[in-house]
Amino acid sequence: MQAALAAPENRHLLEYVVEDPFGAHVFPGDEAEYEPAAFLADLDEQLARTEPIHLWAYIPTCAYRCRFCQYPVVLVHGDTPEAEARLTRWVDWNIREAALWLEQVPSLASAPIGELNVFGGTPSLLPAAAIRRLLGFYRESFNFGPDTAIRFEGDPSTFTVEKLELLAELGCTKLSSGVQSFDDEVLRGCGRKHSAQMCVDFVEQAQRLGFDWISIDLMYGLLDQSTDSVRRDLETVLDLGVTAVVCTKLHLRSYTDTRTGVAGVKPAAWQLPDYRDRLVRDGHRWPSLGEQYQMREILTDGLRGHGYVEHPTMYFARDGHGPETWKSIMVDQHRQEAEVAIGLGGSSSCRRSEAITHVDWRRYSEAVDAGRIPLASATRFSARAREARAIKMALSSLQPLRDELHRARFPGRSLLAEPWRDAFESLAARGLATLDAGAGTVALTPDGEVLVEAIINTELDGAPAPPVSRARW
Image 1 (cartoon, rainbow, N blue to C red):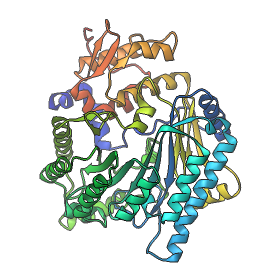
Image 2: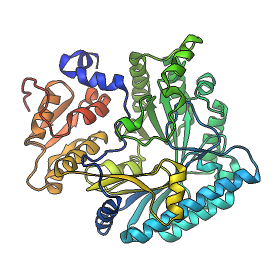
Image 3: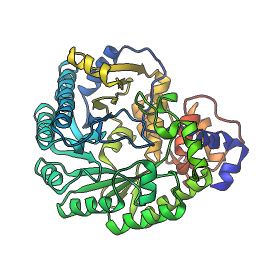
Image 4: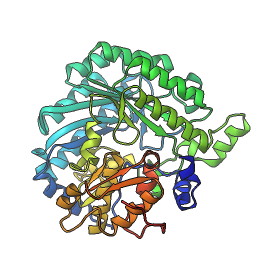
C-alpha cells in the first residue's frame, strides 16, 4: 500500500484520510430540501414490493458520554426511580414514533423484517419491563417471520447475567457490544467506565447462554493506543472466539460536515482542538496516521488469517457465519433494500431518497407528542446519484461488482460504459481495482480495499476520473 499512497495520482485519497471524515455508512442524496413527506411516499412505494428490510429501534440513553462519541445521546445517571422513569419514557417515545411510521407508511406493516436492531446509546440500561414491552410491540406490530433476527446492543457492564437471560428468553439471538479495547489504560483515556475484564466476562457469559451471534466493536487510533496494544486486543478476540468484530478508526471530524453519519447537538470532547492539545501537553499522545494504518493491518491480517471474513469493509465474521445480515441487506449489490430507523437521530433510506430524524431530544419529543414522524431533513437522489449510490454501497461490501446486476437495476447502463468505465480504468491503472470485461466484473485490489472509503467518497459520483494512462482490461 505504501507505493499506492505515495503515487501523486492518489494524493487526494491520502488527503481524504488525513481530513478524517466518516466512512461509508450513510449515503446522502444530492438534491437537498426534499420534503420529508415525499421521502415517506418514496419509502412506501418501495416497501410495497420488497425483500426483507433492516429495521432499527434506537434508544439514545447512556449512563455517561465517551470522549470520542458524537452520536445523539441522552444521559441518564444512577439506579433510581427517577432514572428508571426517564429510561421508560424513551421506550414510550420510540413506540409512539413507530406507530406513526406504521400509520403514515402503510406498506411498512407488511414489509418482511430481515433484522431488528435495538441500538443506542445503551439500550441495555433499560429496565426489564421496558425491554419486554419494547420487543413485544415490535414483534406484534411488524412483519416478523421465522428467519427474522433480533439483535440487542449494550455496554459490557450493563449486560448482566440477568439481562442476558431476559434477552435470550425474549428471542434475541444476536448481541453487539462496544468493547472498543481490551486495554484498561486506553479505556480510561476514552472515558469508558468498564474494564477489560468486564468485556471478557460479557463474551463468556453470552457464549454460555448460547447466543448465536456475539459481535464486539474495536476502535483503533485512540489516545495513547499503540500497535502492541492493538495486537493484544487481537489476541484476546481470537482467544475468546467471538462471532464477529467491527473495527473502526477514530474519527474526529464532525459527521455533519459530509452528512455521512449522524451527529448529536454537542461535539465529542476529542473533537475540540484545545482539548486535544491539552492532552498532548499533559503527556498523552495520538497515534500517527502511519501507526493507524499499521493498527488496521494488524487487525485485518490477523482476523483474516484466523478464519474471519471481511464483508463489508472492516466488518469481520467467523468463516461459515456469513456477513452481517443488516449490513448485507443495505449494501450488497443484489439487495440494497430500504432501512427504517425509529428513534432520535435515526437514518432511514430507500432507493429514491433518504431522511434523518431530529437529533435534539426536545424537538424530537415535541414532534412525536404532536403526532408527527420526527424527520428533520430529507434529500433526494437524482438519477445519476441513484446509480452512483448503488455502486458505492456495493463496493463497500468488498465483493466484486457484477455488470449483469447493474444492467438489470439500471436498464441501458453498464459498469463497463461511461462514466463508470473511465473511473474504474483509472482505479485499475493506479493498482486499486481490477476489471474483467469478459466476466463483466469489477473488483478492488487489496490496496483498493484499504482505501475503499476514500475511493467511494472522492471518485465515484459520475464525474470524470483523474487523468492517468489507460489500463488494459
